[in-house]
Length: 184
Image (cartoon, rainbow, N blue to C red):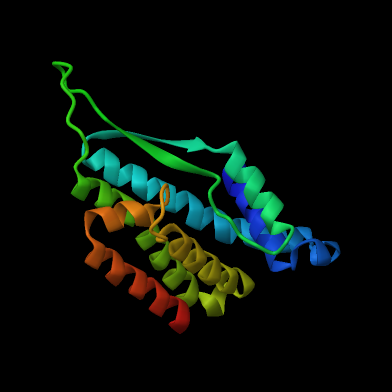
């Protein structure tokens, strides 16, 4: 909950223009960002965990205090850095104590699950725009930003693991997210 709240505040601050717009930032705006950001962030991390566990791995979310601090600090300058934590995956031992490592393909699938969830959440927010108003507009934009950011092919981001698994698949996903960003 701390990670989602900090990320929502960071997005709200950055959206308001950082320090220059902080006086116009309201609890209402932070609330809109909280609904939009927390749904995308939490579901993104849960998708990683769900897929990892489907492969028989142990998976848990760990907050990264430095990432939260950097996100909040950069948001004061209107910049978003969305890395308040991550799902850590470890192979699970069988009843005889043997472990099976996660394959590159499994790691790629686990990694792409988060950004794909953000695209689907963005689409849902977009389709519900007439009913949800400002939350839908913010939810669409925030989730596409989360998907795009996470698909950057540099460690420790999801995109680096997807790229290591299959560069062509990574390219197709990146173009899909880019197209969704332009269209939605």
